[in-house]
View (cartoon, protein in one colour):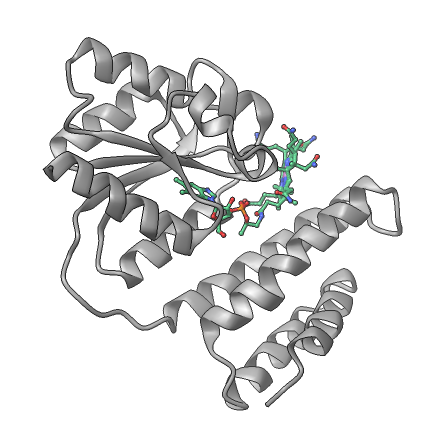
Length: 223
Ligand code: B12
């Protein structure tokens, strides 16, 4: 079996070079060698995106254009891997998910959606830049038990148009017992208690935690 940390180094190097062919061939080679798609996603593709960002912040060799193009390559590889993740089981419930107003970081959301779908959830993708009203309306329309809000920036996570806005509407319409709020994204990964400050019912560090949190919240709704 291939050494995953060596593979991550080679993959990251190819990503920095914006060498799409090389990144794809490394991933395809690993899949052919028996490494599972979800393992490649969690141990190679996502850490490389984070490493790219760290180097950008530290003022290393990476510039913003490289950062943008590498995000595009990562997204296309992540989507191909997610297509290969296997699904099984009964439908646990419905989640409406989108990014908060002002936030166009869609990759994390797509990964969460794929993980939820892989665990048989019905998922309504509300897209990016979703208003609190739209989140709640979509949840009612689809009988969803959970609204998932992805926020990658501090102001979209803690501002009035994120979870705080959704909570306000749920309260006004007396829907708090029927619809729960789950949040995730970079600010929540940096501060694990932040979800409580924005009045969410739970959060998830990654796609798999999103699945566990959504299951827990649906149990709470169904009592
Ligand atoms: C890639 C990236 C971009 C790409 C986005 C590509 C795309 N289609 O999504 C591009 C280059 C376009 C971009 C643009 C910008 N970005 Co940017 N970006 C990133 C970066 C490096 C990675 C984000 C990412 O895709 N990560 C990979 C995915 C897989 O991880 P994830 O999103 O965290 O998602 C996982 C978990 O968080 C969780 N999760 C996510 N959502 C949800 C939802 C729920 C309900 C749950 C339970 C879990 C969950 O599960 C996911 C899967 O594991 C982050 C830094 C970082 N390390 O997070 C900065 C970052 C988010 N960006 C930042 C900034 C500032 C910007 C720009 C404003 C830059 C600019 N000056 O133009 C713009 C903003 C655009 C906008 N209005 O949205 C800042 C935000 C800073 C802050 N404190 O607010 C960050 C933190 C970088 C930094 N440290 O400065 N960005």
